Amino acid sequence: MTLSDRDLAFLAFEGEWRRHAGAKEEAIRAEFEITPARYYQLLGRLIDTPEALAHDPMLVRRLRRRRDEAAETHRSRVTRSATR
Image (tube, rainbow, N blue to C red; front, side, top):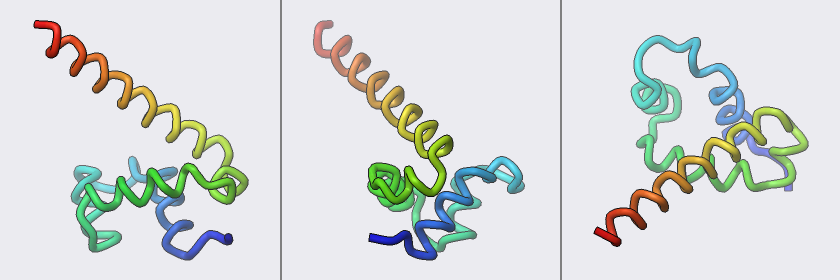
């Protein structure tokens, strides 16, 4: 599998999104014409591919780490809520 132009654009956006004016969600809509939810679904799949890792290892590892930390935070909140 090779990275598509959209895949490359997603990775470039993640590497540079702070340079965009406004909120990230607004920039996602403007840049890709998709909802932020769909963008994050696609990005999540993308960063799990060996091709993305080979293309930009530091970025992909950072994105994976951020995703995993967010998932862990969510899991711990759900667990705390369930035990109340």
